[in-house]
Length: 98
Image 1 (cartoon, rainbow, N blue to C red):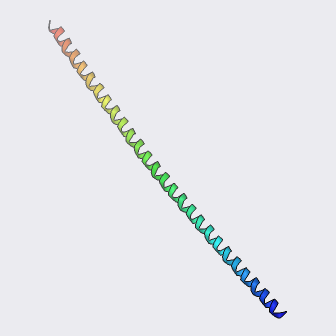
Image 2: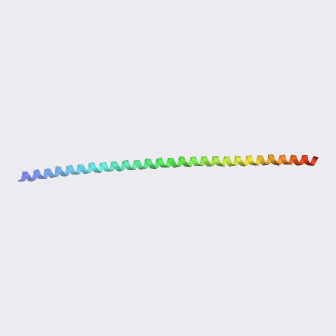
Image 3: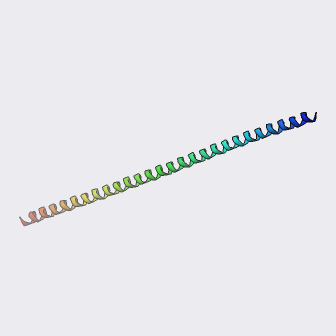
């Protein structure tokens, strides 16, 4: 009977050891999966931040181009107005000279 009890206890201990090893493996796998998820989330966040920075830079460049276009248009309008004033002044001088 004593051999039976010792054999049963040995079998139980082996069984618990196997369960413990299985639990450790599962815990290790779960930890690895969590680490992979965290890494993927970090990568996605970094990519999103880079995309946002690129979009901001593009928008700033577009705004700069729009301002430059407006300034150029204002300069052209001022030059045209100056030319028209000069032409009207010349015409008035010519009219006064007659």
